[in-house]
Length: 271
Image (tube, helix red, strand yellow):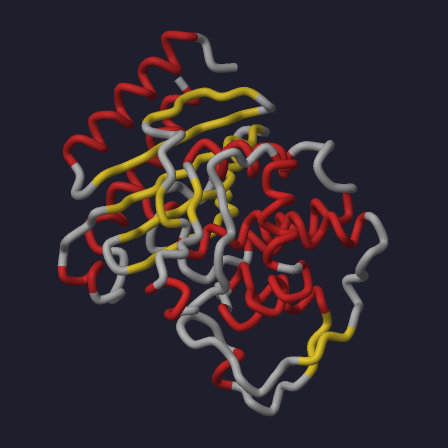
């Protein structure tokens, strides 16, 4: 589906975007179990909230094995992580279904929900299990918004190759049973932060994705569904210095780069 000339054209186009854009960029594209393009794809970078994609997969693997159930009742503690999400604004919500925690973790990038998922998985166990998913450059070293751990140098990291390959596997039949795969894809389709990958796509392309951001960091990783195909794209931007990005006040020019990358993947795939 990606003859060498077509893959080469996509690689050259993404390289031009990376060179012309702000900061440093890593891109990776996979389709149907095969890598298409990798530009700095093996370079570890701060994961930000893209770490929530492998957390989702690990949690659903536990459901698949019967260790947990999507209907499990999970207590929500009064002390909740800040940053992205809604649970910190809803103190009256004291219990949620496991399925609801996972959806909040992805759709609104809820940090409190994510930390509950990490607690249920076990931080060290979850980190250890990442390798079994084939994520050679991804590490879970701390909970979300754990400023003390961050000051100690503990950072969650990932790579474009890892994210794209995992999403490609998630779209296929082998990683999760069909109902749980559908749950994961539906959660990604409910993403509420849509200022990056979807911005330059036509209405005939469906984008299922997860963003991530820190000061100087803007990521988006996801699946592009079009023409009966599903293509995984990871676009990871670091060392960004524009004021909006440093203040977490939007995607800034990085959003334009990521949107152009997604549009380019579709356009080249269709030629």
